[in-house]
Image 1 (tube, rainbow, N blue to C red):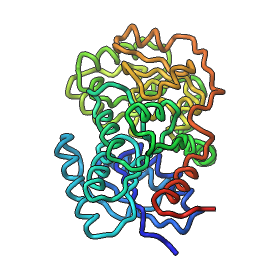
Image 2: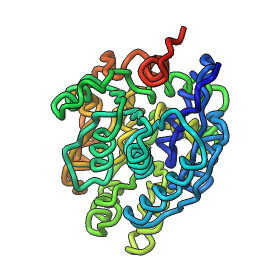
Image 3: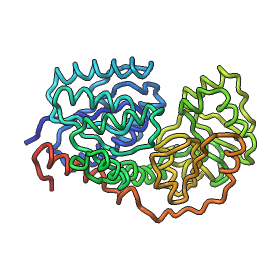
Image 4: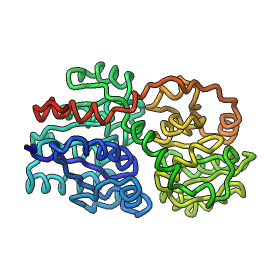
Length: 364
């Protein structure tokens, strides 16, 4: 007999990547019913729809169509629409993932409606409260009922905040996805041929953090650093980056090739074959670690400190052109044998523990 459905909240590219292996794992547990609500935080086809198609995620049952806007306005629209949704349908729990506005909005709505909240990817802390994601993480963890931590450090963070009784170490669902995704990408991705690239002959980049792309001085420094690198850079252009390059009248160096946002399978293929990954994304740092490609992170801090401790990730705190070039050219001495993100069974642990704690069922 099925219980009432779990409600999974997604809204952005990282959410789609993280929910995909959970949906695959749910096929083994038909007694767990679930629905998916897409807030519409990312609404461009290349930032949203393509992930559902290529990762075989079921189409969302509900689409809130909130679109873009300031953090307060966007989060408020999400909360209003999710509250209406929960009033119209009966769910057994709400499952939120990661640290985006959709995550916090769902957690706040559910907690005020006394609906149990499960937070996947709990306990991450950059200790930089100027990042919207840091506020989202802290708020979500403190209103959630069940917390699944991807690393032991995340578990310690939750302990220090008095949340240990609700916390479980699961490992990282993105590692689960990478193990699945690499097999699918090997069969289906043709991006290397399409871009006429040879393995380890190029750099792969992403930029989207406001403190990098919204500040014309910093953005110019970054592109001046890119211009000094000796190999081509495939830069997957977030819409925010493309808009600001034009607005600030920043010229694109000859070795930088702006690409449209890429699907997951093409992106992880490029990560695997890149000489270095240059990014300010949280998830991309881990993906680079999973495929054993050194990463240069254009940020003063990271919530994924395990990648730095393993020598696989170098932080560029001030993002000057000189520091960027020095970091890219630095000889990597990474230890990829460490397994800080679990054994690739995070989804199983999450579903079985959720069923046990919230649904009072033991899955076999």
